[in-house]
Length: 189
Picture 1 (cartoon, helix red, strand yellow):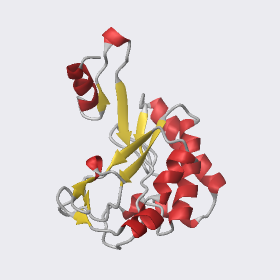
Picture 2: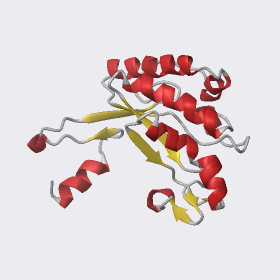
Picture 3: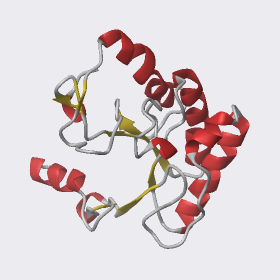
Picture 4: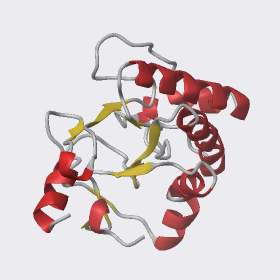
């Protein structure tokens, strides 16, 4: 691909789609938000908040929720689902806490890995999000989560690492917030 083609490809189009490239035999790719069910594409099942899945401490249950969402995504011609949400439940006022798997990084990583393995067994790509340290929605494009290196490595990153290493997640979505003054998408963690 030329540089322009690569930029066009990753830029997306038509809201939640990746453009097709017939020249390279790449079909249009459809995406949907979905940590608690497939969103953005008509009626769908509303699964319980992710924190309730974590509260079950049940990897087998997570491995059933993942494919259930994956099957529904497939039925809607969705190839990539934006979920699970992986941030640590740190502040009660975070507008995305319903997407996250609690305050324990080990538990979050275990449950998410099972959820991802299950979803991807349905040939739907799971996306671990919002990497990393996404604590609030207010002013999220400008706020910086200032965290020392040890806390970042011991609390905020292990669940993402588990999603990649154990769950073999097909994608990771960066957060809008900054970490220690740098945008997550440009930060070398």
